[in-house]
Length: 54
Image 1: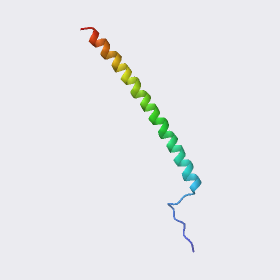
Image 2: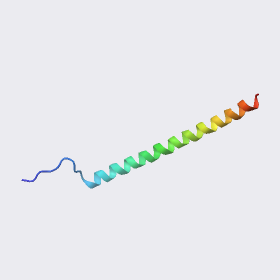
Image 3: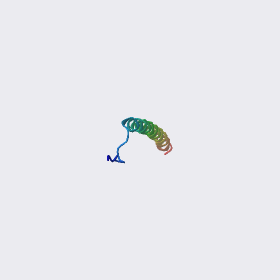
């Protein structure tokens, strides 16, 4: 009698899941980078305004 191991899945499902996770991670990283750039721009603008008002 053959026993199937519960840890193994079909390669097609694993590949599609990995592809979805990879795409989600890429989108998340792009969003975070855009937010960081926007915050840096706002901080630079505020710093230059603060220095000019002395």
